[in-house]
Length: 94
Image (cartoon, rainbow, N blue to C red; front, side, top):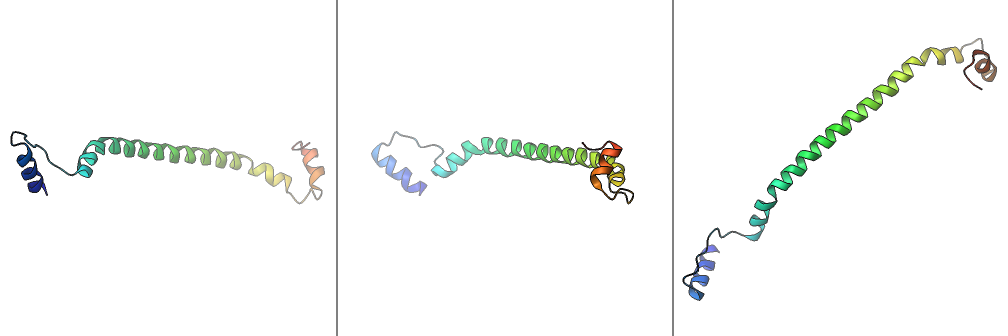
């Protein structure tokens, strides 16, 4: 393909020099490669930040739940058959 292109161009204008003959897909791919690399690099960091944020949210919720287990056990104890009376007596609800 390149040989045919060079011979056709040399028939039209023998003084015209062809340099770096390549298909258009390859030329566009070479130009877009740095942008594609930067995009994937930033996307990797964004995914890492998202995972870190989700882990932090989970840790905060788990810690809060672990602090309230004693309170939940008191609310659901066998000495309080009526849940509403027990909550107001211990000051947990309104």
